[in-house]
Image (cartoon, helix red, strand yellow):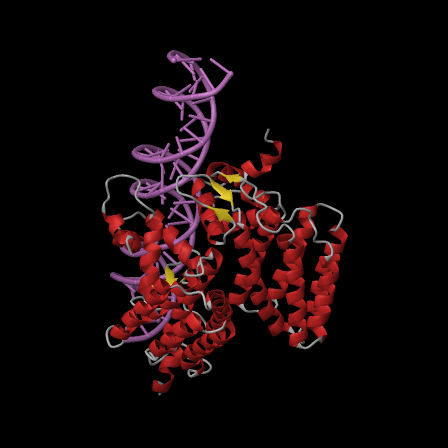
Length: 238
Length: 238
DNA sequence: CTGACAAAAAGTGCATACAGTTTTTGCATG
DNA sequence: CATGCAAAAACTGTATGCACTTTTTGTCAG
């Protein structure tokens, strides 16, 4: 959030981590669906866009590729990753496990301030529910990421964050009608369950929530839902 | 080991992915404890060692940092990561979840060839149990990685592999007496349970196995076990 | 028109150069 | 001798250039 500002004051000094800034920007663009799966990300354009050399842009792409958000093939232009249906399913399976850990660690231990912080995000989700679709998806993701951050466990935070972004990207591929507004209520219930409830109860609710998100998108478009040009044009053939 | 040779024949051609080669070599060196947590990895030396420019070495370090095997701080020499005790605990917690998924997917579905392949690794572990300590640790890790690969699920494979390496690194920090030979028997039992048993049974055994590995090392050295110079020298003070 | 194919354009892969930042070293000083 | 400090050495951060590859474009024969 504050990084963007810091990048501006280019006093000739070394400059705070530019690679990270580009990664942050791209992650956000991807999660908000300003960038779609398959979109091209040439190093030149990227560098030019952010006012850095290809070296930096390239490094950012490498990082994002490691996170599974970008596909990087030798001698080819980088593209926003296009998760397969199986990938999406696996990502959600892992996500359920990881977030269950988050909830287990947090159940009954949220501070007043933390509850407030989470509620604020859900509030924002509520506000954004009729605005740009991208924003509400980002906020929904942010809710889960913030939750993970509250465990204070760096390793867990890292994996949850990464998997949440990948899940968001997967939904961009497979969820036809963007059906994530209902999440607002579920998120509120989650806060309550984690705040008051016993761990098991809260975990169960998180399981439910994630499974619901997954099926709303993944299962409903059961099977292929491939964006392959061949398939898209099939109905028009002859 | 063989990579170095290949790097020599510089025929001017494009050359297959050098970054990946360096990563592989370093991962292996780390898991075999040829490199210890905290060891320095200057870009120059690394590049020279592998016959590439700093650009490539740097990129490899970035990749490994993303995997949690290397610590990378601005303007500082990269070092092999030094996981905290909490990190180690969290890594094992996540590992249990991930490997449970592997077992669940594999239970009762191993082909003859796969069983043979796994058995071969355990055999190698047995052979190596009195040789170089590093080798047996690497083989034990390889067992789990191979298992994950048998699911054919790229996402799961990636996370299991990464977390296994991080677990290995954590053990390098916290496990005093290298106590991993007993794993041979446990690995054999695991193969059997996955081959024949129902998923629940096999999962339970995997849970046990991992928890055993974790406690043999992590819990036994309960609490600090910090490699901090201050602590090491404490007994000698005065 | 349609294909094929070659030249031009767009991009990536990698080394290198140079600026800036630690870290080390060497020395003088209290 | 310990201490500070400044110069040298060791490294990292980043842009740029060149070689090589892929993609696009343009042209010409069928």
